[in-house]
Image 1 (cartoon, one colour):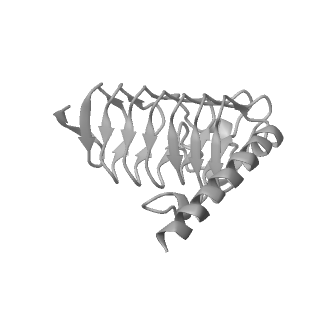
Image 2 (image 1 turned 120 degrees about the horizontal axis):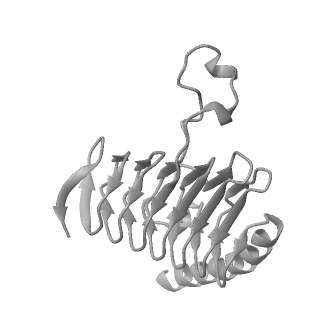
Length: 197
């Protein structure tokens, strides 16, 4: 039985390797070498928006290919003109939502756990008058930076203006809303430093 499971997994990987090349071509994503999707992510670009992937980025939208499973497909959107999402070499994402009004930069060798949400905008204006009808450009936005070698646990939310330092770990279920220094473990709502690595 184990033999048949291995064959099925190998065939699945080959299938997604072929599909990935076509997917990145038609979705207008600038992808590096050997990038891979498992399941189809939802990617939409605003006017002059850009999504750039480094080499060997893996995006998992299928529960078949990740231990925790995912509750949704990967969603990557740029929502205002000239917004950018950049994901560095050897980074892996599972069921992640990334929404950029300005800029979201994710470094190299990052692990983005199941169902993480990263966004650089409040989406709606703070003032209650007409909030529902105001354009997203009226909302407060600030770039997000996630440096190299960061591990973000399942279900984390990374809010506008956040900066996570190199090598840090964010515990599952945390909310990041500020500056996280390098080489620390953080957790909580809002996330705070628990200890050094």
